[in-house]
Structures are given as structure tokens and as C-alpha cells.
Image (cartoon, rainbow, N blue to C red; front, side, top):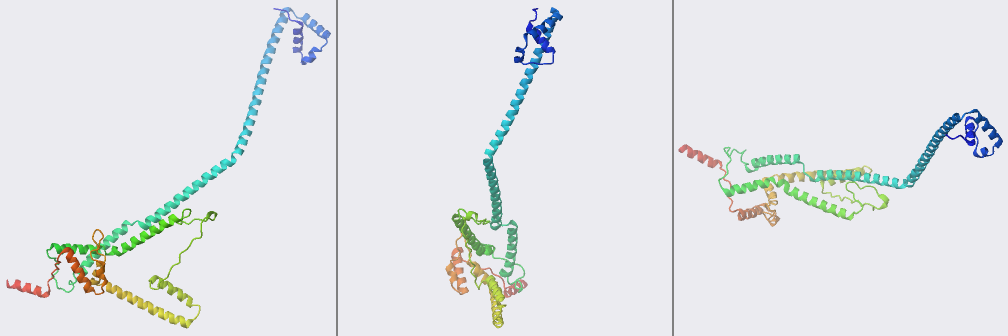
Length: 374
């Protein structure tokens, strides 16, 4: 093993002391001081001890350097990590502030679209419910109409076709002659009873529905940016023009309008003009009484069998929709002329009509006398 040099001896002595020197300070040391210390240290140790001490100091220096290098690397990495975290934090903050307006606009647009979609769905739901309740028939109502129609048909047959029941002119058995033409005619006549409630009402309802649909289509075409079904909405940005409300025309002959006008005038008369008001009130009551009497008389006339048949003849139709009787027959005021013309028209269509023969008291007595003789 080589002998330690003077420089190694100096490093050994410096490592044992607690005082540290810089490189520049070590170079400026007094050579005499170094030589004297090195000679005194070398003279006290043998060669083997000096070599062992040198080896131990070498290992200690290497260990110290290794741990110091590790500490330096860890400290440098910690500083780099901290710096990277700070840079990333500020960069994210800068990026978020730069994109804040875009994110806010996107969120506001999404919320607005969701609100409009929900409102549109609600409006469509309410409109479909309103349209269904207005245009679709109720099955329960139709069933009750069928039952009422059947009952009315039975009462009509008993009351009008067999009016001799209460006069005790029949023994209680009602028969129809075995004739195909008579039975066919009677069936067609009975079928017209079932449609008398629907002829005028159905035509009026159909025309009213078609007019409403046409008016709705016209309004829908005219209102490209605004519609008032089922809700008019608010006038956003002033795009909507002022709505034109139609005025109702009052007709004094209409019962509802008459009552409305009567109520309005009676309210105005309370202000003054008591004498004129009493006279007008009396005249109005008299006119109302006359109107009610006329309505009662009109209803009584309509209740007659011949009058009912006469009114139903106007609505007789084939299955394809054509009229059985021409409308010109009903232009005459005399009912007998109309009935004769209707009889000729029906005979030209169905052939000669054989009337139902109902026995009288004379016929019944003759039959009883013949049976007793036999």
C-alpha cells in the first residue's frame, strides 16, 4: 500500500477538526505551518495505521458526498415539482378565465333551449288535450245516446204508429200484413227515426267544424312568427302586432241576446227616467211573454205526428248521401200537397205502397158474429 502524501495528511487533520476552510483559504495557508503539522502527525502514526486511517477517511468522504448528492438531487426535484405545480395552477387559471365567457354562453344557451323545449312540450300537451276534448266523442256519451235513441224509438212506435191503443179499437195484438214491400218500407221509415237527431245537428256540426279548421289553417299560415293557440304568449322585442278583437253583433231575435239586452237596458234605466222605464219594462215583459207563447205554440205544432213526418222528410237520404225526396216538393205551404207528392215519389222508387189494414169496431163485430154463427 502506498504511503500517504503530504496533501492526504493535511486532509486527515482537517477532517478531525471542527473548522472548515474554503479552497482559496487552503491555498493561502502558510507552508511552514502545514509542514510542521504534517510532520508531527506522521511521526505519531505507523504506516499501517496511516493507511487504515486514510482508507476510513476516504470511505467517509465518499459516503458524505453520496448523501449530499442525493440531498441536492431531491431538493432540486422538489423545487422543480413545486415550480411545475405553480406554473400549472396559474396556467389553468388563465385558461379558465379566458374560456369563462364561452362556457357561460354555452351553459346559458343550453338552459334556454331546455326551457323552450319544456315549454313547447307543455303547450303541445295542453293543446292535444283541448283538441281531443273538443273533437273526439266520449264513448259513455255515445252509449247513452244509443240507449236514449232506442227508448225514443219504442215510445215513438207505441205513441204514433199505434195511436188506437187507448181507444180500445184493437184486441191487443198488433200485426203487419205479410208484404215484402210494406215491411221494407216500414224498415226504411224506422231507420229514418234513428237519424232524425243527427241530420240537422250533424250537418251544422260538420259545417262548423270545417269552418273552424279553415279559419285555423288560415290563421296558421298568416302567423308565421306568432300564434295564439293555446296561449298568445308575450310580445318579445315588439315583433307582434296589436291583436284585433272581433265585436259581437247582437240580435234581438236570439233568446240569449234578448236576455242580455234586456238585462243591460234594465240596468241603465235605474239611473233615471222612472216613468219611461216602467213603460219600457212593461212593454218588454209583454214582448217576452208573447215570445214565450209563440215558442210554446211552435213546439206544440212540432209535436204532431204529421208535422214530425213532414219535417223528417226533408232529411231523408240514401246511403250514398243523395236525397230521397227533392227539395222542391217542400216549397209549397200546404202539407197535403207535399204528402201527395211525397207518396208519388216513394211509389215511383219503391213501387206501390200497401197500407197497413187495422180492423175497426165494425169489422171486429162482424168477425165475432161470423164465429158465433159457425
